[in-house]
Image (cartoon, rainbow, N blue to C red; front, side, top):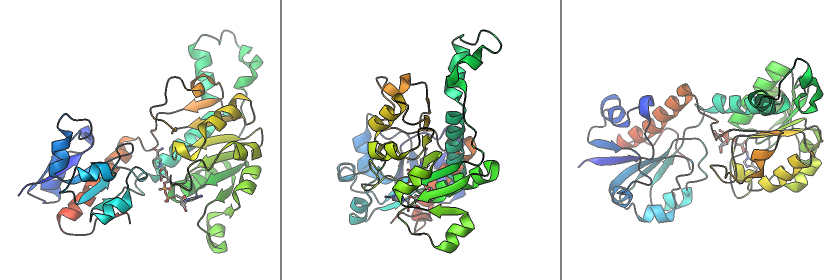
Length: 328
Ligand SMILES: NC(=O)c1ccc[n+]([C@@H]2O[C@H](COP(=O)([O-])OP(=O)(O)OC[C@H]3O[C@@H](n4cnc5c(N)ncnc54)[C@H](O)[C@@H]3O)[C@@H](O)[C@H]2O)c1
């Protein structure tokens, strides 16, 4: 009998999932459909699905699983799987996989981009030119908002020091000789810290020492609201704040207030509590913030590698093997 893989999106030129399964992986008898969620026949497609390829924002929870009695596999197109109820899947014998490693460098690049954009006033400078405020040579010197800060030799604080946090540390150490401190619930050994040239600190102390903070923890009940008004109050008024992990790790109201009141110097954000960012958000009007539409891993090369890995996991399952990057 034909097995159906329901893919939440269309990979376009990146990958043809049907072709991948039938030719590359020789999993004949498997068929792929794209653009699952929101489709007119979503309920019927869930009913017949053996595997679902999902991504951030497309939740897999008990309500979805109830509608998918034949489901055996959920392959996430992304590393963060906070939108998947893994215990609920496990209870029902449904495998869950994700796409770690292949997106690490691109996501760390996005954090670096936001770090530089915030300390060198990229968004403000762009708007200054685009709205015709740059009218004479030297006039821009009068606008103090255009004067940034250099990252060289400054202290970078990473909240979450896993794959992406460590990749950003390497980039900042290599390019700018930055000192790295981090907060992580996993206890790193002295030898690991030495090898990574990074110092593990309690959260408050790491924040107090930081010139730049970048968030790279995964979203869990423990990290939801981890950085709020109390934490922003610990930062230097010259500190810059970056989040390219998940919006709800940060209390966005507290961040907005800290930016508005200049209790921190600026921020660069790729993720938000609510996505897409509502047009009513005060963040849109602030001069000291750079905003991106959740494109941490968004390069052709990385997205192709993620699509391949997500489908490799489905192919592993189709061939009777444990998916290669299974989540447990
Ligand atoms: N913006 C994007 O498009 C984008 C792209 C990729 C990943 N991400 C996000 O980045 C996250 C990190 O990815 P990764 O591959 O580095 O994951 P990872 O698992 O390698 O690293 C996460 C780190 O956070 C730490 N952590 C967990 N709970 C913590 C807590 N309560 N306090 C402090 N640290 C804690 C873990 O110990 C781990 O070291 C993903 O979960 C995802 O949400 C976002």
